[in-house]
Image (cartoon, rainbow, N blue to C red; front, side, top):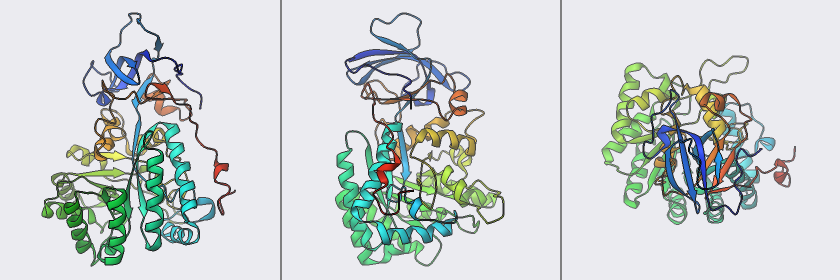
Length: 438
């Protein structure tokens, strides 16, 4: 990637003039937004922090200045990923269907997911996300059998290694009925107690659903943990475990943060049931994470048949009801999504097309920045604000139209007021792992 802005390393105080920022991503209003919701601002950066944000001026700056009539956004927050699965696609062939992925991943996990294998692939993914401008990631970690005690210590070591660059969080992933298996739950609970603060599971209809949810809600409430669920990732309109989760949250009077990912069938429910479910979700204070690239790839895939459905949840209806909505990367180069690179600029662009976050753009940018930051408990992240670390990404686009239209657009990642020199890793860095050399 060619840099759009290069700050000399010795420069401790400088000005960025004429930047265009989504107004919804400014902590405090500065000026009236244009029809795309962008505001023209000048920013002063001093000793790695944002010293001031003011309306753009034509007056010459008294300090070194960069004239940048381009798009400036906060560092990205990726609220739903699977770092432990990443980049196994070359050795885990699949049909591209959800059922095929459910078969392919466990085979690969049993054959290859040693600590060194998981660590190498996770680090590769984090390096890519960091180079693209991401400052925080939540990953879901497969917790089945021996894998629980392999992956969590690897995650913890990487979190410590990256703690000054990327805020890493983790949530366990297992079928909800395993919450009723005492030995399994003990393993998961011990790992979360030592290395995390979030519980989660994949929900599906069945006799273990309510009992499993009650167990996790009770445990999370007792420990002060958050909850993060995989929900209704199917095209079966009879499935609606989201409503069960929301009602359980209300019944338990749970006051911690709750995220639910996917929620695909919400958009397929009969209108009245959808409205009732959205009302429950809003009253329960649940946040929704949609994964538009992965679910458009995975859902409604049948051999010889063109897909009829995008696979995404009812984001516009949820947002209108006051529910916090977010989009994120999800899987990267694995059987659940064969592509992707943890580039949140790609998620924003492609997600806008799939979900129609445009005409008007309005405040939808919050779904990529401030809303996921709040959902992950990252105080003040996802916004450009005075006094905060100068962590932002600059694109040479004068409008959101220009940004959305050109996927190959260069960018500059600014961290603590300096141009980031890190680069996306080469895929050859994975060649030494079994089965990953092309």
